[in-house]
Image (cartoon, rainbow, N blue to C red; front, side, top):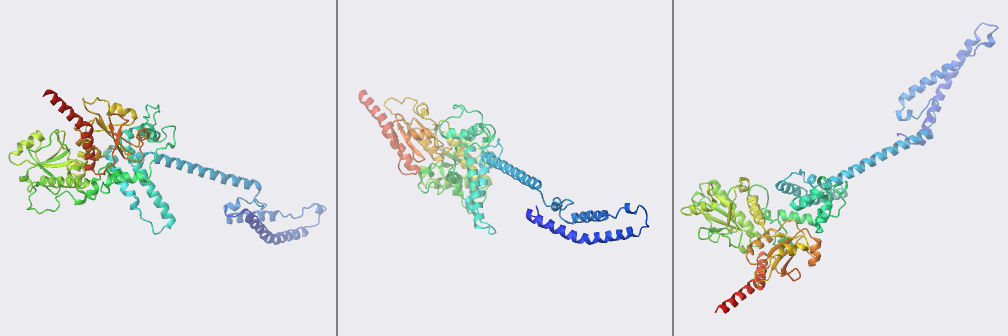
Length: 564
């Protein structure tokens, strides 16, 4: 290993020559000395049979020198020498080549094993997010937020100690990690997709994206965390996810909003609440903590009629009921305690911050807000009204959601301490209203889930369908469905995850795709107007007047004429 083969031969020839040059004179001296002793022996009839001194002593000395040389020369060289000091033979060369071949084979085996482990790790979305399979949605979202911020491409900083090429490779790895994190969250944050992934692996997701139920298609259980679900190893499915998808998820989580007028951003999900506060997580985002926003102590915490924050003053004479158009988050408080009670003062600040964020998201148009924020001053005689709404055992200050006239008090302390969590709680409660939006993942579902019921006499069934490549319902679409829930539409439906069957049915070229089904799935009207919430709502109003209200009013007019 230390010397090439040709150099070995030359080296040992030199050693042999030097050894002979040293030992031959010594051998002559020893032989001459022995010969002299032989000649000095007394004459004997058997003298001619006496043994002449041999070179036995010389051979012993040669072996001794060889031993000394062997201790001085490296072991790898000694292994190639024999007492005859011959060069390496063919058999030794073959053995050395076999050892090298065996070493290369082991190295390749280890490389393949590492590659399989890397592929398995890439497919295991739980490992990517550092979670167990029992992780809650809260844990999944929290882990994504932390890792996405850490590995976002904008966070990459070149290392001055590395070359330009090395930094480029490092940057690509950084971006790849960001895409993996986003893909993992995209799957695990959607309950249905997560269920399919846990049971059938990535090929199950592929079938789901094509509009095919894996269980109905006859797939077996995938087993263990999404890799190896169909025979082990890398799944090899065509479930695709790219950089653009990763940035869309990040934008929906951390902001981006509808400011640019993009239809995609309008139905992009998430809500972009963090962008309005410049941060996320606990506390009060961009306002630096849980206290009021630095208003003077002598300023009364009263919500004016046209409060700049968008908070609407409410009372017993003006309170949302089952016919109210908007969803509400309502703050109950006693203004006499505002400057004396820290909790009341804190909640006032929270109510304003939430309203400001939602109003900003709606481009400062109150009718375009996903939900409205109201405040009820419970001081004086109004306290009785407040307690009737809050229920027994609940006193102001308190927050409550109001949907269809149903008041639900928010009593989770962790939620009440965070502006972000209060916003998310209200949005999730809105989207969780039963039958507000029906899931349509096949062409058959259009008839069975959206147009199944017969319209009243003189009316036409009109259903609204949103086709999207997202896996979560957009808060904007949820708020539109809620505001127009009493306008006579048969249903509001949503086809998620870029369903191929549905895309082919409606000729979708770009997501999202919003259509109205007029009487059947064959007659449709596509929305192509301006992309703000107010314009979308106006489009729905026109559909209702054109196909529902007008015919209804016409029939009523005819009946009145007949009675007359």
